Length: 26
Image (cartoon, rainbow, N blue to C red; front, side, top):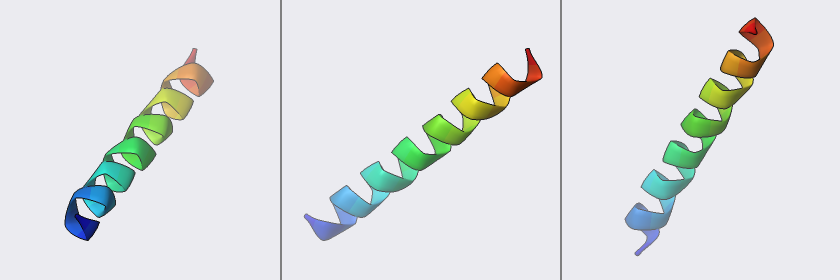
């Protein structure tokens, strides 16, 4: 359960960072 939550958190962080970089470059 904790591992699943951790990986999900990492995925969310990566997604938000990618979204931030994409919006910043445009």
